[in-house]
Image 1 (spheres, one colour):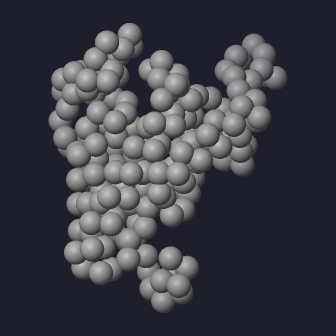
Image 2 (cartoon, helix red, strand yellow):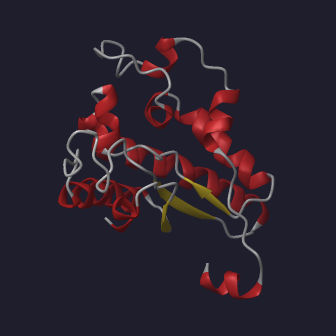
Length: 184
């Protein structure tokens, strides 16, 4: 990747969330798949979960970006941390989810590269959580925090390890509204 960056512009994929919306997955059962059919919380809208419940759709989105000219695809793991997945009571699947998402992107990248010989890379996407280390969730207590720096380091570390194990080439931290979260 560094050698190619010295020679040319390398193109990153587009908006995964927009592409997932284009799948028009209206039925909650599609989001749940067999593994989560009896899960106690609604799962529709948890885009990252599709790497486990509809991996062929996620792999195809990556492949389409690559065929359209992208050199790097980002894993569908924007919110695949224990902190963010807690909104769906899914914090226990962080490793499985990040592994599966990395493998979806890796398969698409390898397939595209095998077809035309052009090198492709997978970026492990680490996005924001639903909690911030710098701002208080309570206007009456400016010093209150919903999460500690140490908790953020641990949750991002857990995600990064699974992404690397799943086969990503690099880690991409994105869309953080809090620089302390990004530092973690």
